[in-house]
Image (cartoon, rainbow, N blue to C red; front, side, top):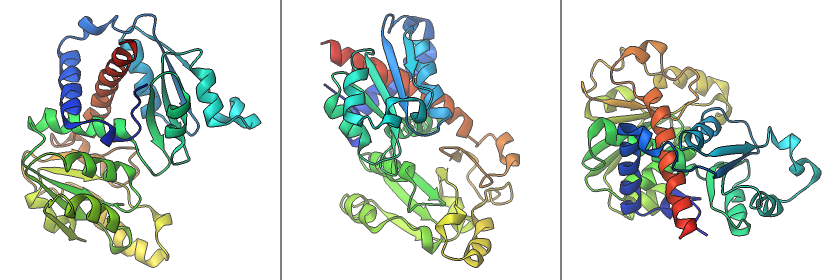
Length: 306
């Protein structure tokens, strides 16, 4: 049974096909309005979520399918000690496909290994969030018309950000990609990502602590939150936090066609004044996430029925 736990579970050709399907849905939604009629998606979210959960549920409903879900982990049998493996086996009796978020890394893989229906990882701890990466890729494609020959800046928490690691992995498979890593020393991209992805694939990258210095070269700016709890002392945090707040002044030297992405939720790392700038794409990104989840649900249900 085919599941998607990591973005690398999908080939470049499959990602390109998902993008094509998502674009077709955007152009002709009525053609897909009953594509999942009589099919059921189970959303199993063992930790809080707004965008991802509602996005999956909206995606299935717009495909003509139905959704069953648990209100929270505390209201499920997990509160009684039921294992993820057993939960996956039980839900397989009720639904046709599962979207699951869990605080523990590897939980989605355990579910996939025990379910008799496809499982989509909707985030497992700090490990992976493949459908966010699909949303990111569709946003870049719709804004730029391509996924190659781009200079992409990642700014903020590059050490712990699962969305950053996943997107770097995905982009590394396209040609002409240059990466700019913008972060405080404390939150630099882990050395294993640099070694196993960037260096292994000979992808040019630079590291800097200055967002302003990096800005003029960027085609894409992927913002993330600098979290206070990641610092050993408050002085360092207070010294650095404003450096990574994107405002209109920091955009003065940016390209006119820069695309600004953010996986959300935003706290204060992007000024609300930037929302009205045509380069702000983070709310479009939310919408594109729904379309990519629609495309992925269609793909996995089709393969499961073959």
